[in-house]
Image (cartoon, rainbow, N blue to C red; front, side, top):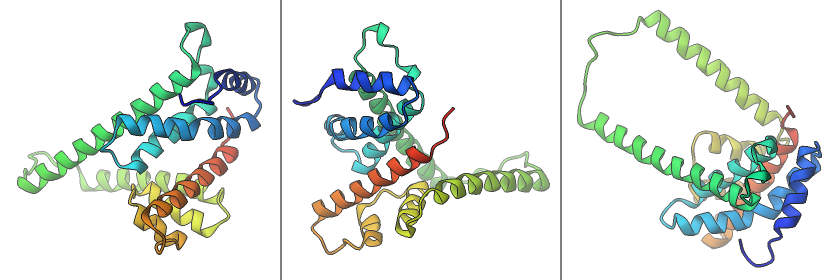
Length: 203
């Protein structure tokens, strides 16, 4: 971790999380997100920055929701535990993107008609149930965001959008240099993640 990073402070926050202190989550995010993104980005230099950001953010949010998954008795520092979780998320996302592109290319090159087709009625019911569940989850997330622009940004993320320029248009910062656009997008996503974390039900 970079100079100035305090692992003892992080461990104290871990104990507060275990004790049910909800305010510790935001402090963990503030303390760890930037250095984790910087470290993981250096290990995935050719990977889309939003993919890295999402992987790191998910890792920290998952830890905050289930802090008991970290066992300090194993001798692994918490910062290394978070780094490994973030690295796995990004590595899995990179593999997923490659598999998706491979499937799309294969589908475009050949058309294979299955000899056994799913009954249309059953297929329609399954699709309808899946859509209802997805819409319910999306509605719950959106209800936590009072700002319409934040809702638009979250909707794009749920759709898998990762291009900076698309988010920049919503934030009305397209006229700025690309590095400032990226910074504004990152800050907006960070703010949204913190809001969702505070609204997330505790188990």
